[in-house]
Image 1: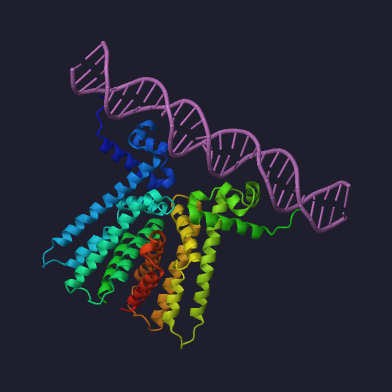
Image 2: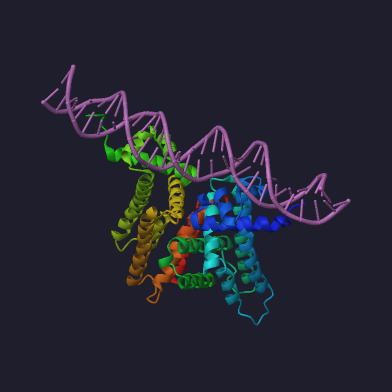
Length: 203
Length: 203
DNA sequence: ACCGATTTAGCACGGCCGTGCTATATTAAC
DNA sequence: GTTAATATAGCACGGCCGTGCTAAATCGGT
């Protein structure tokens, strides 16, 4: 009977160490040795909870995706539960603004997520998670647009497929630019651009 | 007096080998040993032309950026030299479509470029090149918009800063999605989305 | 043939990596 | 105190990395 540890908690703590390292140093920075150090453990301890390095990366990417998704789901709930006296546009804007790196937490997560997504191109094990999240986003936008059309807020002849990609790509692009060129891509500008783009849907 | 080699040509050939490897295997794939093999040289030969690995990566990123930029500049020329009887909108669309990974060559280049840009976050030596290219794109969009406004093709009160970011982010986002999720982001859909977005500028 | 500047080539080192594997520590239950 | 399942720990190996450095090949000019 050993030290009492909740394996789930330990796994989560280790994966958070991974995310921090990926955020700061890129995917390469998350070697087992570095992760162990960042988590305050010996490498053998890290390896007790994850069969190998790949499992650690997969688990971390999943955790990250779920954390991001949970924040967004909260906004989706607000939109779904909104009464008719509410400004839906503001709720929609707030929902999609949640995708943008507007503060430190979201920036760090977005950086790590971006690194994982790009790595997923050459690491097949990461692909399923990337695909799931991508599908989640596309589906969310698609449904939001269809609902707005049904409510008469958007034109009946809107090309939902094109507009879904347009918004999804804009969010990705804004995120990428904010992360890579932060001096010329401020949070205020991000929001203004999102607002402008959302406004262009009704035209 | 040795073998006759044009150093510039050799450097370019080696950097092309780098770009291929980055495209196929990510930044990690471009180790000196892999590059030497891909270029059909011994590692010593590669090292004769580049002081170190970092110089090789910087040079490659520059070459890539210039290659992409040259193709775009050709379209800019067409737009600048266009007479009044020409459909400027079509020329503008073609110009910006050049940023999208619509064929194999452009996809390969875009993948490599994306990998370099993301790596630039943690490799300071790559930052200047990323910044230059980014500036080039933003400036190009800015000038295109201002020109269209001056010609009366766009509203006088257009927010150029926001619209510049909107288009630039869209291009980045479309590229990222086409590269990472190609099954759901076809070339036709890319073009339709670009066209739709350009159309939204006059509204 | 000799010379020398350029080109080609690669050994060996220290460093870091992931992983197979072994060993020790821990602690509730008995 | 003993037991045993769990947790902590890390050695050593083979592999790959970039780089310091040395050596040989090349070939036009003399």
